[in-house]
Amino acid sequence: MAAVASAAASGNGPILECGSGLTTVIVGTIACRTGQPFVSLEDSAWWARHVRWSLKLARADADYRVRPLHKYEDFDWYEFDSLPDDIAVVICDGPPSTSRGGRFGLMPLCADHLAADAEIYLDDFDRPAEKIVTQRWADEYGWSVEREYQSDKGVFCRIKKHLSAVV
Image (tube, helix red, strand yellow):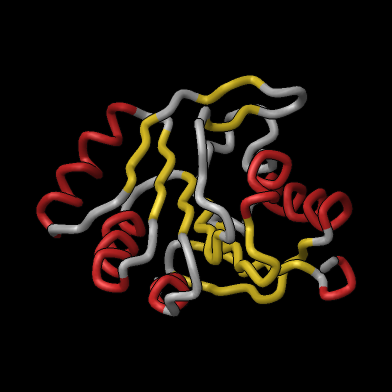
């Protein structure tokens, strides 16, 4: 959580979160204080009630979008109408691993919105599905795991674009 909060507090640009929870409240609070745009995508209306209540209690602000998952070619991903450009930080904890393609859809749908030096924080990196996703991102988009973080809740990683892949 400290690594994600530090990245969000850097003030380098907009923040995108895929899947919501505690990070939504923490990053929403940071974004309020730094004036950075913060968009959070969530597919569960039931879970969104809890997160919205927590955001209200924390007096945090977020462009919090509850959107169903949409079927794309070989993956499911959140429906969205627009995203800010030059997103500096992505917190990827969704969609659920039970969705088709897991979290792969981030790259085909959002890569054009990411800043060249963006950082992606992918949760649940200790699961085989996330390892497959990161390998596809490396092979197809030039993004690879730069660092792993251990916590009492599992493993997450920071992903960046290969310097050789930056145009």
